[in-house]
Length: 204
Ligand code: ADP
Ligand code: 5GP
Image 1 (cartoon, rainbow, N blue to C red):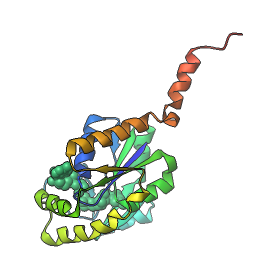
Image 2 (cartoon, rainbow, N blue to C red; image 1 turned 120 degrees about the vertical axis):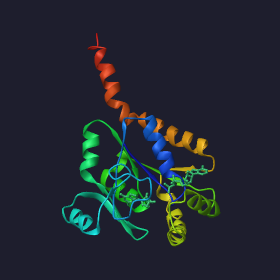
Image 3 (cartoon, protein in one colour; image 1 turned 90 degrees about the vertical axis):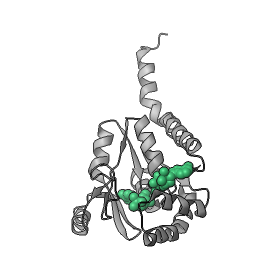
Image 4 (cartoon, helix red, strand yellow; image 1 turned 30 degrees about the horizontal axis):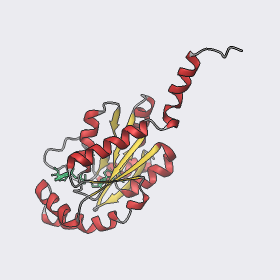
């Protein structure tokens, strides 16, 4: 499964995704490449691969991205190799990407992709959270709030919508979506077939 989580900046997807990864070790996080500068506390190779514009452009030319997009004036991209490594190791992959990334991943990987959109309770609360996070300057916050309206308009392209008013409730919903999706028949079919095979041939 490719589990994609998107939201306007500040709605809480990093917080929710971190918790989901912590609970489900079989869920690999797709560490994106970005030309954005690291925020304090962010670790290169863990939160993002922080690269310069030239490196990013070279990766585009070598076709190394499953998708990439310009978001808030910076480039962000998902590495194909990392997805393939995780899937061939039998792991699911979690993506924190914007709506452009979600759309591209759905086009490329079809029904393996589950799209979840995190809604903030309001734009005023989004602004409060961005300020409380304390990682962005005023110009960056203003830009993120401007883009938030555009991002919110894309909620209808998603399979699931999770309202992050109360963090515990939102986490329970995200967790329930992941667990339910693990049990969709097409994903369980190989296991079901093995059980059936273990029953041996039909006796007349
Ligand atoms: P995003 O990854 O969507 O930009 P973050 O996960 O960084 O958002 O969350 C933005 C800020 O809001 C963080 O300081 C986080 O601790 C806080 N936050 C997340 N969810 C909630 C919530 N339900 N209620 C209050 N604050 C929240
Ligand atoms: P931030 O700078 O707050 O970490 O992320 C800004 C936005 O970029 C978020 O909406 C986040 O989901 C998105 N983003 C992060 N990585 C990628 C990526 O690899 N591809 C795309 N399309 N968007 C990404």
